[in-house]
Amino acid sequence: MSHKVTLIPGDGIGPEVTQAVVRILEATGVKFEWETFAVGADAYQKYGEYIPQDVIESIERTRVALKGPVTTPVGGGFPSINVALRKKFDLYANFRPIRNLPHIPTRYPDVDLIIIRENTEGLYSGLEHEVVPGVVESLKIMTEKACTRIARFAFEYARKNSRKKIHAIHKANIMKLSDGLFLRCAREVAKQYPEITYGEHIVDNTCMQLVMNPYQYDMLVMENLYGDILSDLCAAFVGGLGFVPSANLGDNCAIFEAVHGSAPDIAGKNLANPTALLRSALLMVRHLGEHDASTQIRNALERVYRHREKLTRDIGGQAGTAEFADAIIEEMQKATPEPART
Image 1 (cartoon, rainbow, N blue to C red):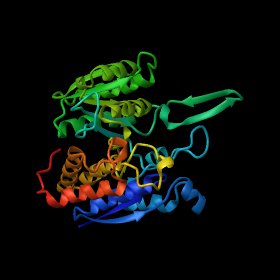
Image 2: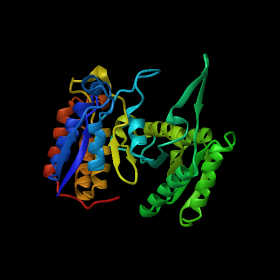
Image 3: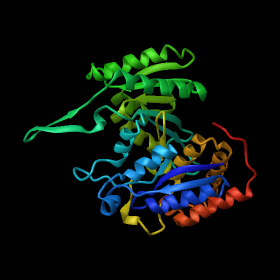
């Protein structure tokens, strides 16, 4: 069986890390048919659109995409490509697992957190306008439909994967209507999953609690902006954004992406670490039903980190992007496949 996948290499280091990940995926023997497209500034120069229609049609056709980092201008320029794609395809759930890799020095070993973020509304949606010169209004829209379905997504994942505890993260003490709605929906859903412990924490207190003791949490579910902030905070527990995967999931399609920046200062120098995009691709491979291939790559990746001989420069090694990928492929080829795990 061959899997058709929309491939968006991105810009900056995106093409390099994407090429490395594609080589690793194809080394499993799983067949992929890649439909490759540019987005962002590169696409605008070529086609006059930041997200060409061909990209939209490809994702509608394949229903799955792998996306490298894309530069988003700060304080001006074109809107976020990530946000636009999430809205276009109603990718309402952002799924971010936070787990350590071997031998990456951190303050917290053996972290195992799942962050579920509502992806389509809330303050992060960027619904802003200038009321009068010098006065800007930013709208936070929350709906019962979106709040309920993200809570249900979290509890369904917990039930299927034997997770024991979910905290809803909020600021309902101040935003009593919007975040209050989010909590009411989460409470109603929680009643249908009595085997899962349900709790609620205010977002600022959650930040403090996470830094003091991340092990007290199992799964966190929250609205859009809080999810953006807390998922980056939690990435620090396992070494930073260069090591965490991300999936944007909807009822009809899914986009898997690296969440770090495009690092234009090292682009084209064979220096970038492809781990984040690779771990995102592992989520994609499992989504496609290729569990053995996902396990094969994950085990090889962990062995490369454990051996430390072919690590990239950002974590003290001397290997380039291509050499790091070569090392993973070599480990895959000499290892006996192990059983898949969730």
